[in-house]
Image 1 (cartoon, rainbow, N blue to C red):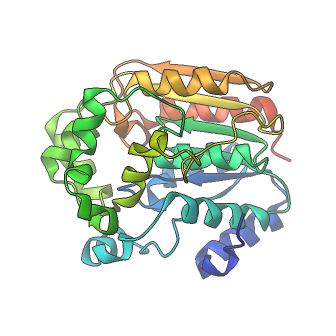
Image 2: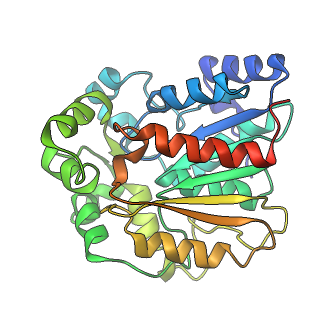
Amino acid sequence: MTDFTDSLSADEMADIERANASGRTPVVFVHGLWLLSSSWQRWRNLFEDAGYATVAPGWPDDPTSVERARNAPEAFAHKTVQAATEHYASAIGLLARRPAVVGHSFGGLIAQKIAGAGLSAATVAIDNAPFKGVLPLPLAALKSSAPVLANPANRGRAVTLSFEQFKYGWANNLDDDEAIELYNTFHVPAAGAPVFQAALANLNVFGGETAVDHDNPDRGPLLIIAGENDNTVPLAITNATYKIQSRNPGVTEIAYLPDRGHSLVIDHGWLEVATAALDFVRRFMPTR
């Protein structure tokens, strides 16, 4: 992978240095589209309290706050899956030891790309975006991605979801009050390019940026977490991901969470998801 060390911000470098100085096992969190790295804060607190050192880089050049992100949507316009993957890989390369990697949505796809490159010691992919070779494309997923895919020009733009779009794709299992709170607290614009990259991956004979080396024996243990009522990444996609990854000689497991949608990492039930991820990491990685 290309060295993207220069793309790491001062705050990200400080996070890495703090993790290395702690002597603890690092855990890297990878967010997906329409969120910032700050969305992982409660998860980071949980893992830190359990004895791990956490690092949560953003995608390259992400704004530092939700307010700044909303005021500068153009900052997201040209982000791609591979550039984000190389950014995270560069951060991992500066850690004193191989980390666990936890990712959600497109972050779950990136986490599996990192694992396929042999860079993670254990990986948790939560409602991950599909990689090349994952064939199901349910109607719910098409409807959720329509705000991006309906206009080809969005490939080079940032896209902000309306509340109604966010409610369908992310918060379909929540009442309106919580959905509005999450939308106001966490939602930011996102690059359209990764959505096109995932949607067109199986038409690209060369694999494209969403290709994952799921056969690498150095992939390490992998847990896939599936929100059973997710409209953005429906269960058919997650099951297909698991079927492909389970051919790897490493430990591959899937956990089904009933009545959970795409917001499962940030909504009122986040702790159940985070605890499942933490328990898996603990099985394979001591805190020191």
